[in-house]
Length: 110
Image (cartoon, rainbow, N blue to C red):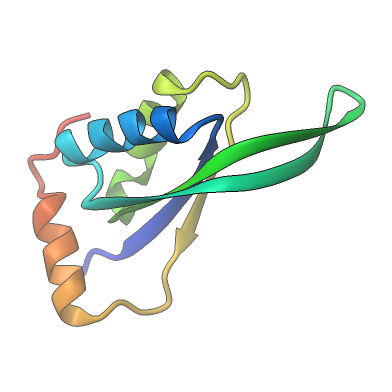
C-alpha cells in the first residue's frame, strides 16, 4: 500500500510559501500544506554564519509523489539550494490516509 510522507521546506516569506503550496495542492501533488510563519534560521552559507526569517512549509503527500514535489518546489523556489527534506511517517490514521491518497490520486499532474 502507498505510504504518506511529509516534505519539509522553507521559504523566504509566507506569501511565497502560500503561492507554492497552492500550486502543489492544485496540481494534486499534495493533499495539504501547512505553512508556519515566523521561523528564524541560523545557518552557514558560503563560509559565513547567516540569520534569516523564513516560513516553514510541510507538504503532506504520498511517497510516490515526493520526487515530483521536489521538482515543483525547486522550479518555484527563489533559493539556489532550497531545503527539501522527505520524511517517512511511521503511522497515519486510516481515514486521514485514505483522504490524502484520494486527493493526490494516480492522475496527479507534475
